[in-house]
Image (cartoon, rainbow over all chains, first blue to last red):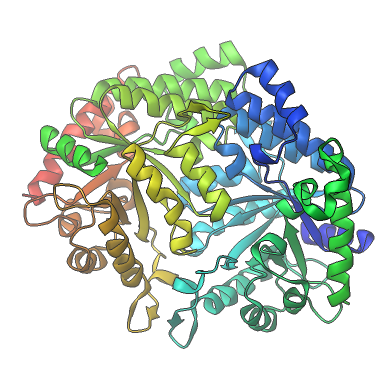
Length: 308
Length: 308
């Protein structure tokens, strides 16, 4: 079960952090930008190439300290085909380094469309008997608004290929309560979605008491996280919103169980663009990767301050 | 406003049909498959190439009869970079033929990730002052579970580049009521989402009384469609689920206003794979495109039977 591998990685590194590989062109050091623009002009290919160089350096700098990366597909998809190629290569590189790869795709579809996403991202493409493993993710994120019909097409591939899901339950944005906190027949919608995710999770239970069907629970809503931790004891949480979005380690503690497991916390620009922050400016842009490593160490200390 | 162009196209063709370009390898005639596999082996590139040949032939056969195509990105995304290249080329080809292009992507994200989707799919990529129009869609579909924070990043690009959105309100899957029909503080969640979409729509009103922010309302739930038509008078509906999924023209009539406008009905495999159906078998697989044309004509007659 992939959830066991994720938990093993967290325990080995003693660090429940996922590094968010969500590059933006403005995060890329000038010397990398320059090299890529000289080679490919001011094109999406140049940006994609710069992302790949940047990501590989970040992965090299942190892979021994963290259990996982979360790769936000939007940053790559915007670049077209070249971007998707870079997304796949980034996931593959992280995977080769022993990291668990979470593809943050937040897909939502049904029937043959959901099967296509499922086979592409998690399963295999069968082209007249020849099988292709196209994407290289271990987990992907999904949006539950459409219901079970939009989750079920992923389950068999999760079983067959040891993959997992993180389903949006309570998102980190300020306004996430607009629909998610509506009282839906006695309990808030996010709680109802959460209880369905917990139920669905029984299909993919690992040996550590957690399921390979996890939930996305934002760091920025600690009261809701506390409730969800209670009603979803078997569900592992992927927690976005730490740092730049305002989530604090104290708030996030509620996402963990009494043994200090049960969640992985994502940080993206706080790590990958650390070199641009005052606190890490001594590294300079040439050492952007060392700055990222230091930011990972600091985040680990900050999290462990609040989590057993 | 793009919604006006869509309505103009519908009125010119007297046909509120979007052809769903959602190819599967099993839909592709053997002679195209063979050609592509000979050229590119049993690879994702061969499948992508076969999809492009297939799509272009379908577009050539129907572009004078329909106002729009809906392109389901999952079918392309599953193929990796080659698939995204084919998706973009398909959208571009349809657009060149004067068709409105609806990218069925159902994205859902916030902040910089949503901005990336927005700039890639609807706006422009600005690479150090050089602008790129990467994707070629006129509308994209979005999932509302995250709330306004996941919609707002698209609005400015819609204004600046004459683009539009269709937001999931009531989906066509059998089990869509699981969350969407929960009573959320007095009204069903889908109605509440619908009333937000109607409100958001006031930001992008066209001259025909409809907004460029539309809603996805499944053909398979006519009672809900009737309610939504009443509470969302300014919102244009994209209606999936006709034909293969069980939605009938009689059911869909409720999605239209008293002037016979207000909705566009998608059909995918019922049109593009018509040649595989008994009713169109006389065309044979060589004439798969003529079969698609005939299926469009038959669908138009069927719809117009029930819509003014």
